[in-house]
Amino acid sequence: MREKEPVETRGHRDSMAMKVLFWELEQRLMSSSGASVVAIDNKIEQAMDLVKSHLMYAVREEVEVLKEQIKELIDRNSQLEQENNLLKNLASPEQLAQFQAQVQTGSPTSATQPGVLGGPQAPAQNLPPPNQGTGPSA
Image 1 (cartoon, helix red, strand yellow):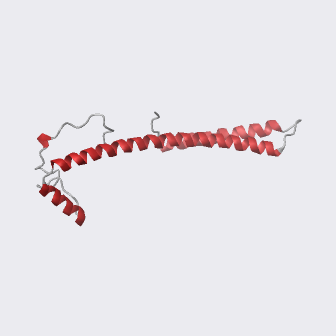
Image 2: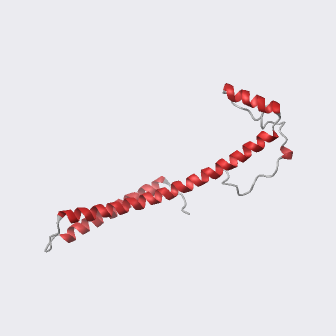
Image 3: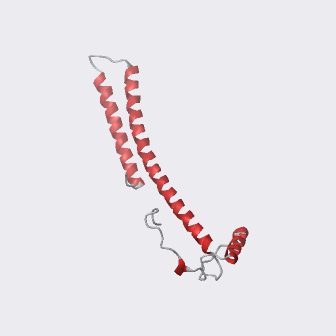
């Protein structure tokens, strides 16, 4: 599993990769000129293959980073769904009705108002311990 690297580091790495790419292209073009003249089509094909391989490598790296981010988001979503279901089960019908009314009117919920889902009346002492290892902690 790769660690996430800052955008600046990726940008610097990409810049270095492009410099290496152009240097390799220059070397191939210079070595093919001289006594044995190679057709320009072959030079272009070699250059395009080199560009393609560098681009594919960069795309594969980015896909791996995105796959890891998707996995983390799926884990976090699952954790939040479990938490949401637990809170719904612990809330009284009055609390749920008040919450639904606030959602419909677009009013923000306040965890400090009595009777609001998650407020001081929620039976915190009856909550089961949070699942350890169900996902990344926020």
